[in-house]
Image (cartoon, rainbow, N blue to C red; front, side, top):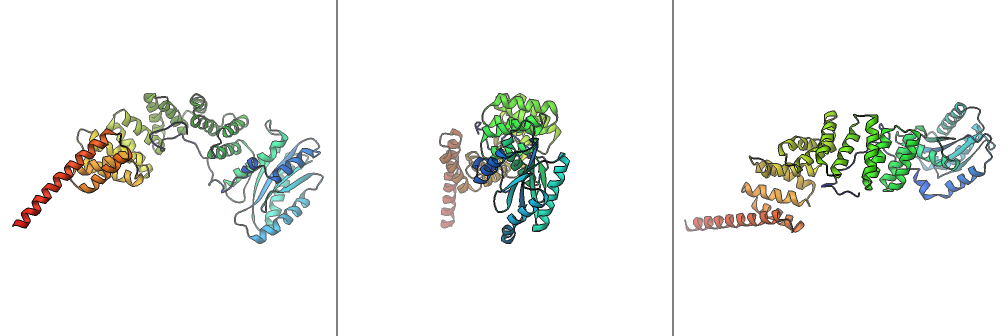
Length: 414
């Protein structure tokens, strides 16, 4: 990412690709488009040279989904070919094996699209029955929203990725959400320029899709195109003014642009809509902390650590507040917060130093306090506060050693 925040815990928010999926697939068929496998190239070449009356056709990618035995794999190709021939014929379509469990087919010469839909359903059922297995399917039609003929196989691959989000035995027709999922896959692989193109194609299909607008904005944001990101978020918020994810992202844009007051306004608006979004509570607490509004920051940081108990940043900031930011200091509570922060992030110099200081103020575990203070200075030797605390704790330890030595001598002479 271009922008370096105080913590990796502060970042743009993206929705699940389809908003109601089970989980992403283990592998993505759309990755084949970048690999340009022999099978993909061969099918595209056959499709390019095919004489398709009326030019309309449908492409489908079919996979035997779920756990597949070796016996089923061995039967798959023959079963697929037999089922294909029983529903279609070589004058009306073509097919290609992608691997031992997946196949792609193209067919045409249907009177109406609903006829083609029935054929697809029939083929899916025949394969499923013959193999006694669930079948996953992604389907793409041509023409469709300005896509070229040689792009339709790719669309079907993206559609089957979309279908896989729902688990076994589903089929999906390629749509804007399929492009959102494909863009998210590219985003995950840090292929941001390609992801941007994919989100834009999705918006050509569905211009008011908030997830696509937000995803495009996030992608611009992580590559440093902040003004472009803001424009996409503003488009999304114009469609739905109470979309929490987008309101948060606009707030983050203002934070990046160092307009913290406006950032806080947006984050408070997002908080007013939904108090159960960890990122909102953390960033709001973080910004109020930076503005030295300690008591205002605390409730948001408490919420952040409740919503995400693995947030070292929330525990650390709470520790700092209880240690020395309030009129009435609470080193015991500070120690509890710093202890959790150090458990979550043992290399956090701020938490190590703060924890050491909280123990020293309580005159407890002084050897551990000295060790943590030394470690904080080793991690960040140029931070004066850490160095000062280390000196103070050494002095306290020395004084404690003197007292202990005198006590031992008294006992011996008694």
